[in-house]
Length: 110
Image (cartoon, rainbow, N blue to C red; front, side, top):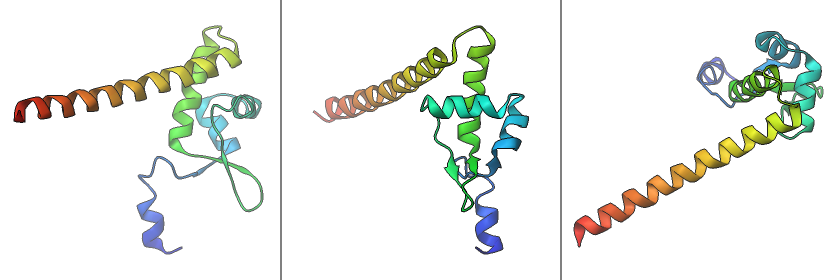
C-alpha cells in the first residue's frame, strides 16, 4: 500500500480503521457490547490478518445508535432489530422516491 492509497482511505466510511478497543473507547462502551451487537448481526466487523476485529466509521455510527437505544432501556436484541428495520425503511423510502422521480419524468415526456 502506498502513502497515496492510505490518504484516499481517510474519508472512506467503510474502511475498517478502528480496533475493537479503540471503537469501544470512542463509543464509551465495552468490548462485550461490540461483541454482542456483532452476535446479533447488526454489524460484522472485518478481521485483520491476525484475526482482530476492525470497525469502520459507518459501523461505529450504527453501534452508537444501538448504544443510544440500550441506554434508554431497550434490550440489546430489540435495539438491533429496531436499527435493522429503520435501515430497511430508509432504503424502501429511497427506492420509492426514485420510482416517483422516474414516473414524473415519464409523465412529463408524454
